[in-house]
Length: 511
Ligand code: NAD
Image (cartoon, rainbow, N blue to C red; front, side, top):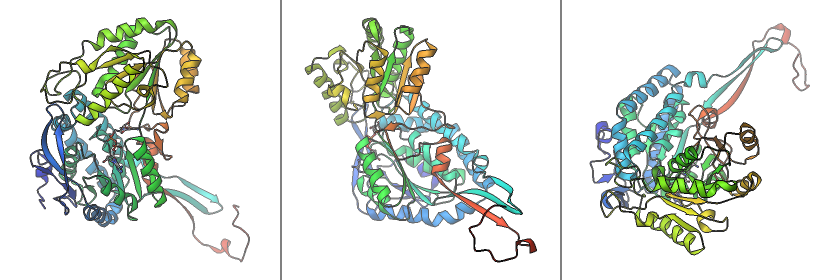
């Protein structure tokens, strides 16, 4: 074990050949020796390997979190706030380091990586208000000379399991709030881009977080299953694909845990005939191809209503052709996909759409990237005349592929979106306030944008979809995050005096 905090924070996550675990404030190599490659998607080269935790490694992290819990829970709100605030300051001053780590392992362009860090930082800033957020209520004289008050208390050790597409932001949707509320954390990041989590662990140590409050286990299903079944873990916050989210929700719940499991998405952008088509085309490009479409809030289905489709598709095609795809460190607009397998899978969907009769308007398979030939490239792809039965529409593709599903009426558009099994994000583009108001009311989706293509809620609201995009009751961060990471307790108090004397076997009534 290496206990030098700077080894993890200042490049230890990048420099070594092996990305280790972080347990009890120190690096841990892992017992089993299983590893997986971590690749730079812009070159195809293996940068380093990541340790895959066995049950024993995962249990070591849980034990560390369990041991650290009583002291951290009892630390004053003032002291906890100091640590959170210091973490925020360090993160803000060193965000470029973190963004570079994200770009090297995920592939998204540097600006986008910085944007991800900024959105995670907002949650840290929200959590800095923990003293206010954890205030309970007090009712004096609820009954005669009887007072009632409520408190919210932490759960204990909690687990966070995150996906590859936001290696810093998604963990930060959860752990700042969990820690602020007095819990201890075991984070299991994606094995595809694990270094951001380890860098964040080192930053916590520098910020003064006691050892054991924040732990990282790298790994695969073995680590996940241990977290889902170990009785010391009290809650699970998961983000990933829908089948795994459902599995995590069912397994964690069956083991008595509180679970929030955010799943996949198929986000629609409806454009009404009165919309400004240039602004709508810009938005479709940004939301469809930003981060190479590897965002759970990416727009993957464009739904033009009425006679505007040809015009809108032409404007989008024009813009898509100008996007520079290439290495995220070279100032390009769009980076590679995360792995070769994923790129091939996305490309296969384009083939399947073409074979089933859709028209490829812009073909990302033919891209000439600005970057290494070994990178996992696929350029922006625009497919028109997609119908709801084609796999390019029914499946979550998670790549730079924008499908155009033409409809004649507003009602048809609503029916399409509400009939989709996912319900993460949706957007409507219109200048008609009445139509937008009706849309907000009728649409069965958790996050709605009106002329906003990626309506990711601010940290002080809660993030989460409906239907197959979220299993469980609580959305991420905001007040739902505070509630998820705490349990309510109500205390009824009276200080006995002679007026309380006497025997009464009746059910207590307020007087
Ligand atoms: P994924 O489901 O493959 O992996 C997510 C996490 O689960 C990873 O930590 C992974 O190691 C683990 N995992 C994978 N397979 C597992 C299994 N069989 N058993 C137990 N654990 C397993 O997802 P991904 O490819 O990393 O991320 C992309 C997916 O995440 C997309 O579907 C995307 O929509 C979704 N996502 C959703 C949101 C949201 O807010 N709803 C946000 C980001 C990403």
